[in-house]
Length: 255
Image 1: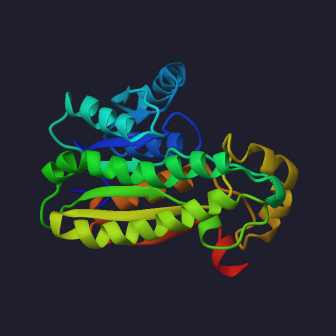
Image 2: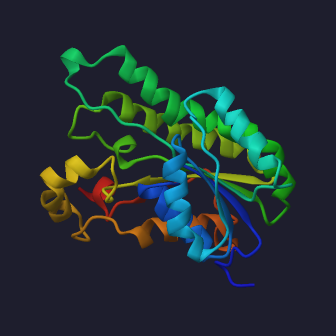
């Protein structure tokens, strides 16, 4: 079996209809997995399915994952069709930028609900399906999507976002310790600048300067995100857990 082959595996990617989630969903499909994607808007899911279906079996299940009830419902919906889930990618997220003096309580509630609490609730809701897939030497996988803003101090006033991502990195380590004995790995990726709706305004204003700072001299490409999730989900990554992997051209660790 090829180190990076995911044939026969089943994956769930939240926020899988655009940006980094779409990049990851495509990578998993191209490696052979079947993929369920989720986002709030049904039409966004339908558009993503139309774009991705040439690469393999992909199904959209709309859900508003800012609530625990919807996290549970998503797991139940997937469970109606699958007896196991090999890979859960917790990618759905939100950002908020506003000066310190006016940064509102609602910005904390919205961002922490989706970026921190939902990955916890989703992992718990999918636990029976993950445990059904995991085996000694071939664990099921949870991949949390953090950010380099959780590794260094960001240059923009995104207080709740950077805090939520730092907390998600630590939650990843906590869950890795607990779930390892249950044949489940838990890792995080910390993306740097990639072309996405969330990053669009930042890249339009500062994209060239950000690329100039990075040791590799560019922003991220879709294959960069696809590659890291395939690695963590495949036999190649079966002995990696509790890791936070920057995918940022060196920005967080060298600049």
